[in-house]
Amino acid sequence: MGSGGYDYDLYDGRPPRVRDSDTSGAAADSVVRNITELHREILALFDRATDGLTCDEVEVALQGRHQTISARVRELVLKGLIYDSQTRRQTRSGRRARVYRRQGGQQTLF
Image (cartoon, rainbow, N blue to C red):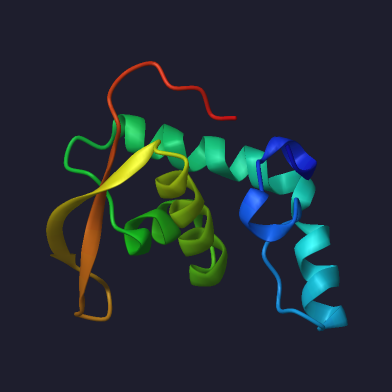
């Protein structure tokens, strides 16, 4: 289990970063404490969303940056806590985006 309670097996136990970049490494390390809380906030949104959510909708609801929110959504997909519903919905930019839904059952975050 990596820092912050998240299992980063894919990333050597640390948040994703650009290899051999000191600034990317420092930025990734700086968010470790906040990641689990952000995962919980995102899951809470999905728990209330009857129609699922796009990353764009999560970004708006949490006033978050795309890079941060989309990475956390992807991690939740990899953990099997949310899934691509195969539905698409228009974003603020007019593009179509995946609509994710919460997996059923009593799954724990980490």
